[in-house]
Amino acid sequence: MSKILIIEDEAAIRRVLVKILTEENDAYNVDEAEDGLIGIDKIKKEDYDLVLCDIKMPKMDGVEVLEATKKIKPEVPVVMISGHGDLDTAVNTMRLGAFDYISKPPDLNRLLNTVRIALDR
Image 1 (cartoon, one colour):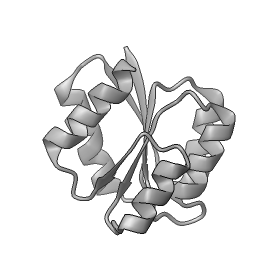
Image 2 (cartoon, rainbow, N blue to C red):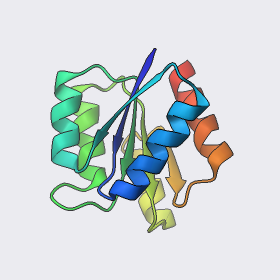
Image 3 (spheres, rainbow, N blue to C red):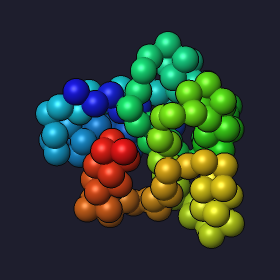
């Protein structure tokens, strides 16, 4: 069973992502965090196989979450998701070690494909 953490401040988007992943594969155990601080706390305590993280969030943004995750558990792939997609941000997160970058609203096939590839590494 693969453990996936979704870090997203918008509850509706979190719910949709959880629904998409759990309906795609019942072997996905999906956990949620509504901000970066809670997400980092969960990453410290749990062993996740994948993290999906929004970029624009209050308290701690996704770039900070990515940097912290790479220090705490560098082996965990982090896929960045953003509704404010600009090329500079995408390039920056990839340079910092993100596994991939997906724009909101996510294309369903691209999202599921990225999740499968990240979990298969």
